[in-house]
Image (cartoon, rainbow, N blue to C red; front, top):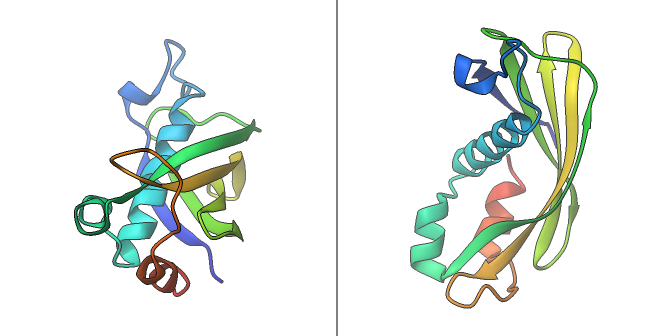
Length: 133
């Protein structure tokens, strides 16, 4: 499977007082890229919740920071399924500036019933959709 790629520009709101991207903002960048990856597969999260009662939540995050991004940098965030189970998956993500790897993460997202927040199986149409992205 090919990595999904999503471009993000660094704005003032993303940086600390030194003009460097604040470390927690990489998690926001990763979230945006995962959302757009799902959208590219035809999975809109609000519609998923409305039609099936299911939604995705972050269960676990491991992030490694390697280099700094700065104001106005154009970053490319990659998304790739690393592990897939019945009710969760591990997504490998990376933040790049050109050929420089800035940060990488492994994010476990779980599927839960929105009303109870109890784990549930990832709906089959979602599994079929993301297998082709």
